[in-house]
Each structure stands twice: as C-alpha cells, then as structure tokens.
Image 1: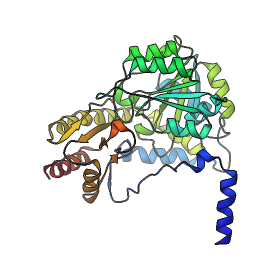
Image 2: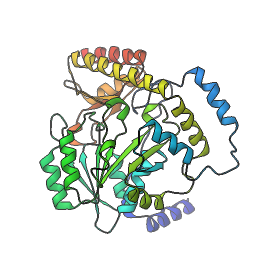
Image 3: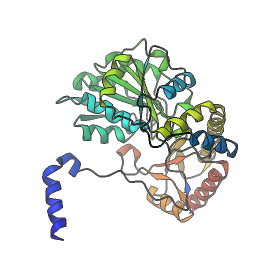
Length: 366
C-alpha cells in the first residue's frame, strides 16, 4: 500500500497537469450485444476471400521489421483512391495517429487548433495532449450546419495553425456546404484538414482541389470500410507538408500484417464497394423508419450512422432499455450542449437494423 501511494505521488510530480486532469477514452464492453455504437462495417469479409487472404499472409516474415516506407501499399492506395500523382501521402496507425502527428508538428507556444463543434472528440483530446490551444466554434442549430461567419471570425481572431473539418461531420452526419469550406481555406493562415473518414458513404471529396489550395490536407481512414481491426489511415497533401510530418512518424508504424492485409483488401475493392452501397441503402431505409417513429427526431446523414433525439424520454432511459434488449448504441448526452438527449445509431445489417427499429418502437410507445 505504501508503495502504491509512493507511485501515485511520483506520477503526480512527473505527469503534466492536463494529463492528470484528463480521462482515458472509454470503450464499452460489447460482448453478447448487437454492436451499433462505433460506425463499423457490419459485414465480415466474405468466406470466399478469407482463404485467399490467409494464403497471402503465410509468406510474411514476422521476424523482420515491416517495410518502413510501405511503398507497395502506397502505390495501391494511390491507384484505388485516385490520389493525384504529385501529392504527398502519409500513412498512420488509424486517423488518430495522423491527427496526433499534425498536432505535435504544429504545437508552437500559443498555437491553436480550431474546429467546429460538436465534432470528432479526438480533435480536442489530441490538441490538449499536444499542448495546443483548442478553439471550438459552435455549429448552427438545429441542423448542425457550419456557421461561416463565426468560423471566419474565429480564424481572424485566433490565427489557428490547424483547422479540422470532419466531412461528413461526426456525430451529426451532415456535409458542410462546400462554399463554406472554400471560404475557410481562403481565410485560414495555417493548414485546413478535411477529414473524409466517411467518404465511402458520402461520395464527395476535396482531393481534386489540392492544387488549388496549398494549405489543404485531406485525411481518410479504412476503418469504416471493413478494416477497423487493422487500423490504417492516410493523409494526402502537398509534398512539403508530408515531408515535415514524416519527421514525427514513428519508424515501422504500419505493421507487416496491416500492410499485407490492406493490400489484399484493395485488390478486392469491389467487394467492399458493394458492402458500402448496401450500407448506404440501409441508411436511407433506417432514416425513413426513424422519422416515422412518434417521439423521436432524426437528422439526415451522409455517413454510416444517424443522429437521433427522443422527444418524450431521456437518452439514458432509451439507451438503457436498448441494452436490456441486447442492443448497444451511443449516448451523446453530456458531450456537448447541442447533443443534449441525443443518441447515435450505426447502420448495421438489415437484421440488426430491424431489431433496433422494433425495440425503439416498443420503448417509445412506453
């Protein structure tokens, strides 16, 4: 016990106050539940692909370090996602690692990271960890649209080193107006990161505008497409940005298994494109059903999830009743004032979605 107290005292002397005051990211246990809380692809890899994938992995030398540059994988990513030939490409262990690299690179004394809110929570978490000032600019109620005037005023006042725009936005699911993003690109004195994590479900991109905006950085992840367990994100920008960010990338950050598996995934991209199309169709069906439920408001989405708010019951009550029925969704109540009593529902398989809709209807009937 004395040793434990000594360790606690030492930790408090060594660790920064912002870390001591923070909280570790919590991931709820989903064992035995229908998991509709984390924006994952609900479809497993087809059995016909699994054998070929395992065959491809058998030739890997796990006793050797991976290709530090991931050259073969980068070539496949460029081809699969039509990445401009002259653009720089940076790989990360998921998008989170890329956000962290950018934040650490820009963390001059007094520098700011600016983002609309509510948005992806890790922008603020990583800004705080990196020592950047975080500046949040509220979205417009009730549709979560970008407030162009407020964003431009904040950019003028704060001179942010980094601006992050999730497009579509998480957790609201909407696409900000392209003209508003263009205005931010023109006004921002630093880099503007358009986070296209849900590109497969929105079908819109700023990749083709890289030449027009030297401060534009486009970021994507493969997690939503069916690769969440392998963790691969990538960033596309002018080569000079990538040259500097590479200095913060830890050696061998993309493991051999991930490189080989993602390469295999890209060779069979049609299968996963078809899965994304099924998810988009289910999103529209589920949204229509949610809209028709008395006692619930749902917002349209261009992602693979839908934001909703019970109008007569609390989010905690609905969330808890769904858990009793074996369904796990995300309660956002308390995350931001605009998300009071809000729930976020990931689009699952048709069977999972039907189970959710049936349970919600019963709960809302009271």
